[in-house]
Image (cartoon, rainbow, N blue to C red; front, top):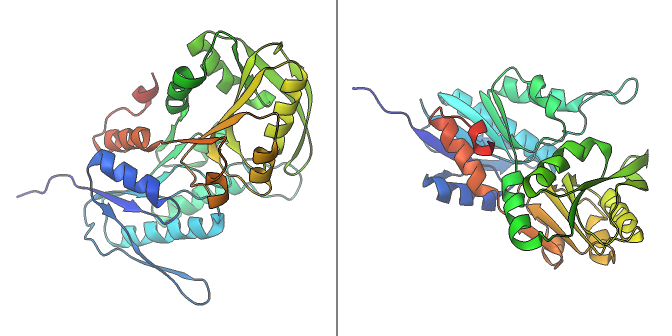
Length: 317
């Protein structure tokens, strides 16, 4: 007698709330690996549930503290591989180190590729992530890779709560224009772009605005907000050019210091919409202008379709 396919959902420690929501959508019990940190900082993992022959999905964002969460993910994957799991899919809502996707100067690493190699060697057989900072990272993997988009979640909120006849979508830099075009095409609105110059790491200065924002309600679309320097400069430039309202939408709320201070203290940024790929700190949760949308349902659908060998890309067509 042969056993039927079996799915196991494993939660990392970086985002337990999102893991629980995914578990509820899938109606699959959540397995919490027994993670122990020794006095010297080393991580030990034990999977108490039998996973032999199962299709395992490990949910873990490699967000702050990035190195600890990455090592936890790698160790969990290795434990599952040695426990004879049939397949191991790393579900990484936020892919850490994604901004280091190329050599920006001599003698520098391509850390996004290094992370890809680590995940593969550890034993991952597939990766599911959300809104990669750079699409070419998919080419760093020699295993199946699915880049899920948060745009349906954000689009639904924009249509329901923000969209008016005066709405215009704005890209904070040249690299995000394609992302902004998607929203503008769906809602049949105009777009604008901010000509940005970086003067150092995590330092940006908004220079010029390409497009007219006079009398418009601007919605800035980005993939992540780190220190919020770019975002605040963009909001300031838009208001200076006649925008009546500035709202930002971003998938990943990295919110490194001093992001929360900048966002809460900005008189130019009216609201910021983010998703739960990264859990908010207590300080961020107390800021009224930050709205969090859940990606649990769309990630659940991606996991369900992967398990059933159905199309994942059809979620966005």
